[in-house]
Length: 569
Ligand code: ATP
Ligand code: MG
Ligand code: MG
Ligand code: MG
Image 1 (cartoon, rainbow, N blue to C red):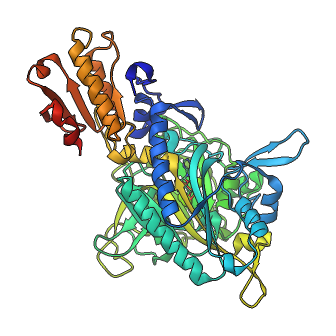
Image 2: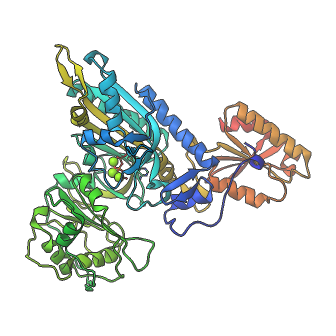
């Protein structure tokens, strides 16, 4: 690629809502542009990376024996009624009507559609197992899209679905996918953990998430070094006994706000089901707004409740602090039918506490403390004690070592679904005895666009992105210096460009004219994160030499023109 004919679109400024490194760098390096909230266009550099991620995913899925298909993004709403998931997905699902007034949804996931295919195409146990995958856009109307493509509304997912006649076969394919995912994330050069996960809205029994370790992650992972145990903390809490926790020491003060509402009032107002399944009261505070808390989500064991709760209005409250006993009071005021409640405060504890006070102030307190209090994030004001059920230092459930807790970005998720969808949609095959039998299913997702952001979270410095070679938009950059004064410089650069491409490298030749200074060219190469860089200069050529530098290293090497290609191998 010649830079003169290429939309580099590097910029200095980043939007105010870009708070994490990958979001800022994806804008600055010209990878994506926001069209509307949670909707991103991928510019040429971003698309090159995305293509490489997809190619790796595709290769490993094919190697694992899965078959690629492509399903429509738009799905008939009836299919979701048939599976019984239409209400569960309410909120996250974008619903549309066609010109005949028929109901459709923009697919947030494709269990229903693939099960429809399976019930029509698969007839006999002899055809099984089969695993189908696609790489395709999904739309989820996220409550608060954020962090750029990390949590967007339209995003690219690789979703796969396998069909089986018995549990052994499903278990074997699950293991096969686990291995394929491990190969994918290894090849992508990511530092990740496979962790036990909640099955959530998908249902089923076994589930693992693949979590890229990063401080900007929204999930918490508990694992023990050297042991075999690693779990999403949501899952870890489900299996851990509630330990004695140190009393919180924070001195906080409650401020009564005129809009205070009890959970009961909210339930009435928004018609949320009060079920035992509601487990977590989640308060989200906006990191970017100094004085406001902007969102509240109540979510439960089932995403059902999370989604219902997305109907809650944005709650705004001034930045103040509430006392721990007032939070206790709030918890006491929650209806007993809620069962154990976890309070999760993702960002900033004091703001979240204020929001709690918004709900708790003036409510009846009947002193139930059978609730678990769970601060889902490390308290960001130092004095607040960690109230999670599972904390660093707890013994690992497998008996090996003690748990550490780190943050992760969920880039993949695999499930054993069992017969949930096949049963609802009547997807049967004839078994060995000629009897009709419901198929068992597994499903396997990868956040393809999210991977690009996650990779940047793990690979950047103050100058920009440092791509792992496997997904770099270009492997090599060539900067000819003062080419307008020296035809030989341009000639050598041009030849190198051709030779490297012929050898299979993706090369960016910065042939922009003298209006673009060498400093700007170097800065762009660093920002875009090209792993290898050659500089061709008049001075070097006098001795037949090029300058070589690796992204992330300060060391520059002199290399003879003839050895350039060999040097990269
Ligand atoms: P999250 O917990 O982050 O909301 P999820 O558990 O809802 O994700 P899954 O239903 O497991 O997501 O979907 C499979 C994969 O799709 C996820 O592991 C993630 O990598 C990706 N993904 C999900 N939601 C988004 C989103 N809003 N933007 C980008 N990628 C997403
Ligand atoms: Mg989600
Ligand atoms: Mg998740
Ligand atoms: Mg998931």
